[in-house]
Image (cartoon, rainbow, N blue to C red; front, side, top):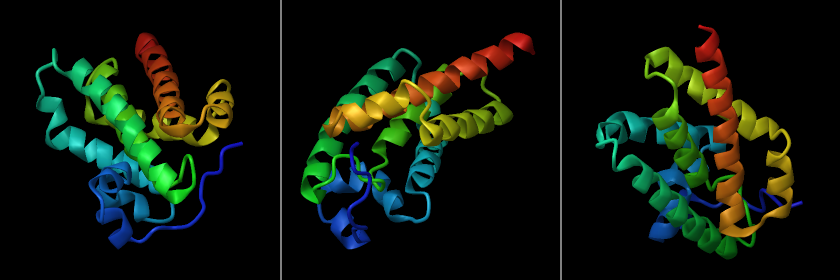
Length: 165
């Protein structure tokens, strides 16, 4: 199993290098308890402030670029920490919530809240195959992958609920 935490880096350490700053969600990853939840909040705020206004044709490219950037950010920061998937690295949560908010069945305030709650549920509980990937795929790719799978679970539930409403 991949270790999740080794030490809690300071905000000064996180802010000292740009890759750390972004891997730690612009500093939200140093907030405890629940740095992953704070990273999801940070991602949601970024979505509300800017990304929801991005032309729809650009969003898939932005998401793919953010995913690829996240692989590098989390790999480099994880290497420096000596931990493949440190709990404070939450760029992965931000990219995953951006995917959910973009692809959800309809955009209402309550659906966004449901997106947040359902994504956090699947990211924390890690049902199969999320847990399998989380335990076996290391490095920056592994950090990013399990959250994308949690996002897909969230979207499946959201579309199921939307179908029956």
